[in-house]
Amino acid sequence: MQIFIPELRLKNGDAVDYSFESQLSDILDDSSAGGSLKLLVSASCSGDQVLIKGVLEVTAKFDCSRCLEPFNHTFKTDFSEAFTVTGENTENDNRDTLAEKAANKLTISGDYLYLDEYIRQLIILTEDYNPVCKPDCKGLCPNCGADLNKAPCDCSSNNNQIDVRLLKLKELSPGS
Ligand SMILES: [Zn+2]
Ligand SMILES: [Zn+2]
Image 1: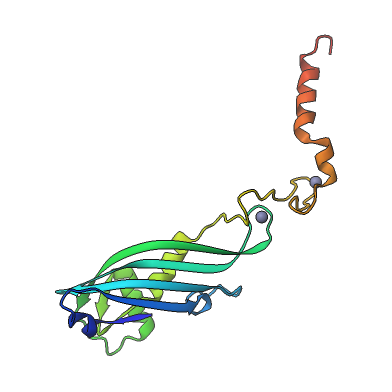
Image 2: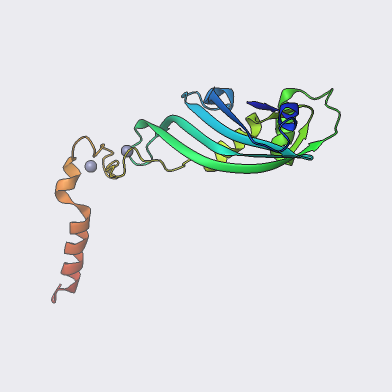
């Protein structure tokens, strides 16, 4: 995922749209489970400033935070950022180094804005840490660990909450 700056300069400040598709494994080291991303970027250049804004969409397998079942989940995030073009010599910098500079210092050295590292950080920042497979996922029984989406377990017939209430009633009743 890269943007060629000389091409942007030719547009005299007008925006150019880019779209990228990539496997998550190309960007994240720990995404053995697969997944993919789509990136729509609108970029413009004025002076030594390159402005980008767009939408990132990530689709991947997540483990439900309630029932632990893996499921496909998509999340989207908007972003907008300004990068400064530096006159820095890039002869000794490889693509990864340049991508890191872009992400961490918001600078562009050389002819390309490499977005990989920026997008990697964006994914980590916006990742949904408590995804649920469906809004009404019943989760696992805290007592026996059964998946309550599949079937109620035996524990539910002697519900803990009722037990607690009964105990309280016992405490309150005179003569106990
Ligand atoms: Zn679930
Ligand atoms: Zn149970």
